[in-house]
Amino acid sequence: MQALDLLLTRSSFSKLTAPAPSGKQLDQIIQAGLRAPDHAHLSPFDFIVCEGEGLNKLTTIFTDAAIKADSSIEKIEKSKKMTSRAPMIIVTIMRYQEHEKVPRVEQVSTVGCATQNMQMAAQAMGFNGIWRTGSFATDINVRNAFDLNQEDEIIGFLYLGTPECEPPIKRDRDASKYVRYWR
Image (cartoon, rainbow, N blue to C red):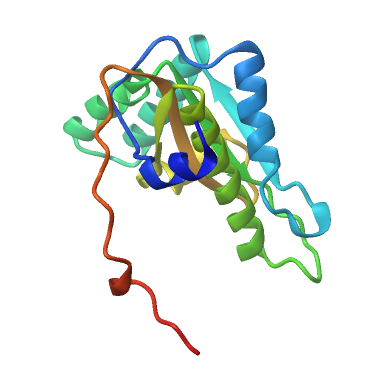
């Protein structure tokens, strides 16, 4: 797939099944993430690839967090099913590093770009996925489970797998609503 075609037709897709990327494909997806813009080469990346028992561990983290937050029964039950939506979830975390020229927001952007790069690389290989955040990305109990410091941040949960059917291509957006030119 040509890079521009991928970018112009990409669409997140949540109906995912096995197989997930593995071996060389997964290595290439991770390498694509590591190619994100990274001012001063700080490498604030921390990627946790969850599959198999790793998905069960992530389920436990989500469910424990929902219980500790006194969530509704519905949210607790939903937390038990969240990780079954894909055969692989990559937790993308920004591990902040103090630097006089690279503010925290730039390090967050670096890992955000890495997350998109990984999603696009997976899609280029015939997989698909969806980048989720939600309340668990900022939940204190989830943060503690991943041993995050105060300045660290969960950027997202990248669900990856094989699309169950052909993902729909969304129509183009009217760029004039989002772009201004200063000439």
